[in-house]
Length: 211
Figure 1 (cartoon, rainbow, N blue to C red):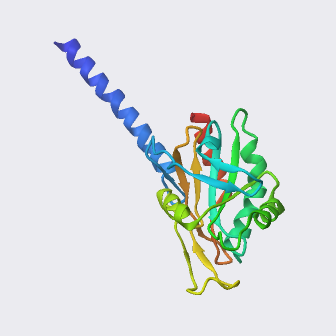
Figure 2 (figure 1 turned 90 degrees about the horizontal axis):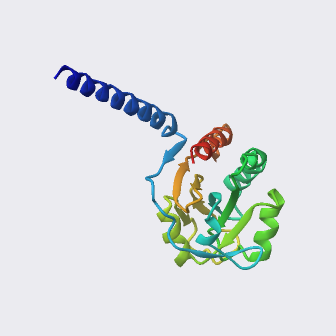
Figure 3 (figure 1 turned 30 degrees about the vertical axis):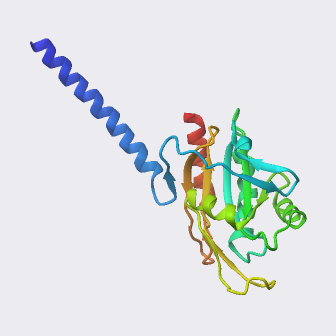
């Protein structure tokens, strides 16, 4: 009877330690800059036009870590700032042994961002970056499924000078094609929505090591 009680207490202690470790992990990774997603949350089926030609779909997510970022080439602040920062930290993202990481920019402005213009824009920041476009009918449900939003500011958007409000967060997709985490944007010293890139790199490396 005493041996049974000792065993029961030992199990409780082990379970408590495991739970404490898990809680500590969640605290350090579910803070203001990163939100972990439920395991198994797959990216919805999609097939978008790649600026380099052809299509980019769920098949291109397999066996890679992917960072999704939405925006548009006429964006005056968030997009050029974020893409320049992604270019800066890109060497750190791809240095992990055995972990392929790709950065994918999704244009939410199909009216102006045609393939050739989109290719020139994205390659200005980094020739390894991928740019995609599609129709609003496909883009809206896809971005919403990933917790991202965008909207056209001006009603008469047929003209050349309209603006688009859009999320500045970055979405991380794991090699199983699942929505793994979202890196949320704060506001930097210039008043621009901005993701803490160095903290993001640390989180991604941790996720890759645990994968």
